[in-house]
Length: 498
Image (cartoon, rainbow, N blue to C red; front, side, top):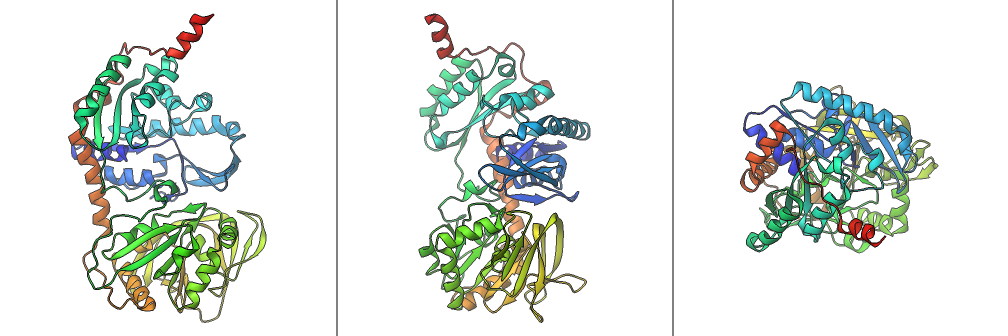
């Protein structure tokens, strides 16, 4: 998010700026203009730069399918599965791709802002690092270390991060930023001053906590156990309550953000069957591991809760992997390799997983000829559908997409509900099915405007709370020469004891 804010600040100054994240790990992805998929965070950063998302902004994307394996996406295309322990075997090839892609971006744009990944002080992974100090050293990039004060221990984290780096890595670390601060910054200042004395490096700013930044979460951790967004008061007499099942391998959970943008719509992510008992709409979102997450759904008792909700005539929506779960059968020899698996049986379709992933930006009409746009990222395809099945969306050539059977809806399209008219039509129908006759959609909610406000808030935070002149000096001149090397006290003590 801070990278997106710096990108927006530079864009406001008329700078041709592009984002870059060498390696991302996330199941929240977006379709780039050049046809492949990238981390959703880089799509937001591209938006902040005034650019269309490109696969060059995130050349390596890891999409976890389990605790030990991930799908590897290189320049937008899936290249296979890899385990954590043998990932190093392909690192050299990936490093060449990363460096060549960064060279192309630097040649085309005035400035490239590179986001790291996790911590630069993951010393167990430093030898093969692609995204943090390994990238900085290879490309001679000045580095700013950002610490989340909301997690506590901010000064220890910043000092300790620097101290764990070797001298050559430390020479590129030009300063710090403290993020998500709440309270009186004057009380923090003595610590900031001491950090400068200890490290010889300035803190370039203290960014305050903002309640307005909830859109476009980078991964599923952004959606842990809370109401999504900032629900505005309803326009009508009633709220519409939405429960989104937080699957273990949830993918593109950001689809739920479009509903949370509507006044009078409360969206809660949950893993509890009881939370589905009294809501109006249940949403099964996308999944990186449809069959495994469907099994989890059954083990948790959530499958029964979804079926009970549907049997009561209240609306159920499945998106991508969630749509596949609503089918009668799933044939999967690609993702889980579990073969023939029964679905929840709420939609008369069968799903077969293909080796080649479907990727693309799409458009059509649905729900009373409402225009709708979205994007597809999935291996599963509808291999059989009941005769006369009503599609949720129709493409321009008349091809149907998704399905509607009474109160149950399904689609493979992500992002469809970001289309304002289509979202309003769906919520109106969902409210009718749920008996929420006092709910009214707002005629003026614009999801695109909400995203624009998000990146503007980020740009404002950078302009108001960071030393932008110091940032500009780093952009023009790189890390200052002669930065001191911090020697950890532990290393000194051990040496002295010998």
